[in-house]
Length: 182
Image 1 (cartoon, one colour):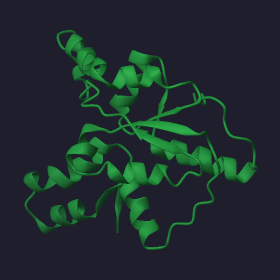
Image 2 (spheres, rainbow, N blue to C red):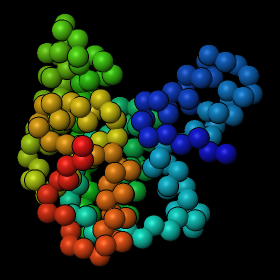
Image 3 (tube, rainbow, N blue to C red):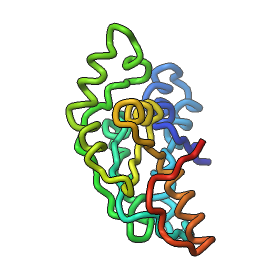
Image 4 (tube, rainbow, N blue to C red):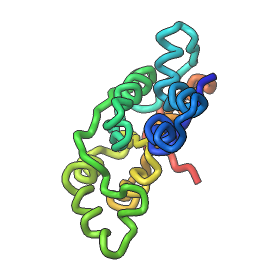
């Protein structure tokens, strides 16, 4: 049975660290079955089992990859899943860490370093994106850094797909600007 997670750092910890904490077969099985949300969807799509009636959301999305996604080779599925959305151009932001690294960016003694990291490429790229462009980031910390540093709401891929499913159901016109979810 697959174990599917939305937060890259949490899910990918099951693959990497659980086996070092426990050396039994159960730990190995958990790690072997742990998939990010996007990895699971790509697997199902490639097997012909994914049937999503997706509708147009907007023309473009800029995407920031979470450090864990990048280091574990789990970012390509993010791009693949977003490309399932009709008419959505997916542009990956060439960035390093967003600078948050969990709670690192909130520390009084590490805040400046966190912002400097984000300002290397991530935040400038988000600021350059027009308002009709979706900003996508799976990491909770990444989304907070984008919000605080660029005053834009970044969405998890699951939310983009939910919006696309809603559009298919209502057959309405594309969203002209970023949605605001409470």
